[in-house]
Image 1 (cartoon, rainbow, N blue to C red):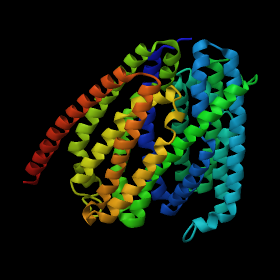
Image 2 (cartoon, rainbow, N blue to C red):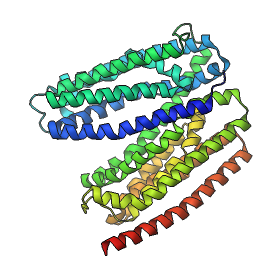
Image 3 (cartoon, rainbow, N blue to C red):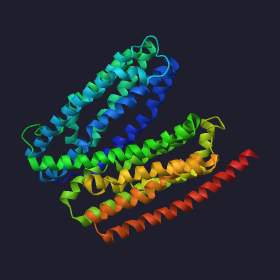
Length: 473
């Protein structure tokens, strides 16, 4: 079955755009209301439990990604029986994962008190609260979250996104009212469990509406099970390596530079992640479409599509980078009320824009790589990159002047991506799937975009400095 790539991408992009707006606005309002009505201690509890349970979710290992990628071929072949077998296998795996998360979560219960320094709000029982959070996390795995793979494999992520967006809006409105009326944290958390269940119920209804003939039945052949498990092992290494890369920065800053430096870095990094969310609207809408075309069209057609979508994504990246280089520092000054502890010198926003550009320049390629299920060939890449990032982090913090230690942390991440991640993953894609000629064309395009980015960002930087000088005068 050949899916309508353009139509599905448009659907997914619209859904992602709306979802991104919701994710930007409502969490900010929620955080503000929390601080105003309950205070920072309750917000800290939210963060603590999110961190603990976020680590437990690693127990999922990457089965969802592996199963979706494995389903692209049976979707292309319109093999309904095999899709049903995959769905049954995935349901079994998710129930085991849910049980593992719940069991490990229970095992952590006796150690909760040691994870909280200071006093807990007097109306809170830490263990009861943790159990509610744990049930909320495990609930999706025991319910119908596995049904989402059917929609994802058919490039209908817009349906999943729209359900999550609608439920999120309803949830935020409900918890706002709960906080305003009762100011009771237990009511707030119980409401989140209700909306987790509601989201899963809506997801299964949508899945059965669009694909009523795909139900969990039959048995997956042993060789296909082994293939999924092999992919899961590689995906897990990618997850662990990514966690090392993205977590080491804050850990090193906290350990060597202190919490104020963490706050300063967090403010600059927040801008990067917020703008990156806008670019993600483009590339995150493509995965299922890539997966279908890999099995229904020629490699030449796939390469043309890859180049077309990469150019679209890079055009958005160029615009964002140019605006960021001009507005980054003025925004930080206004946002932090020009606090000298939080406003860094001019090199910091420049490095942050470079970090943004380097990260986003690879997204379409790794989206295609994920759709093609190319995992095992570069499974050591994120581990090596994480080790390089951590090592250079420590070296820069140890030997750079005090004023530039934080910049060294940013630079170390850029180095890891530019010299480890990007060369390695592009070599794998153009060796396993495409060829040398396609690699040269791809890198010529990337070099051209980089040259344009340097020119535009340089002009924008000096124009911004000139305008700021006029304002100061």
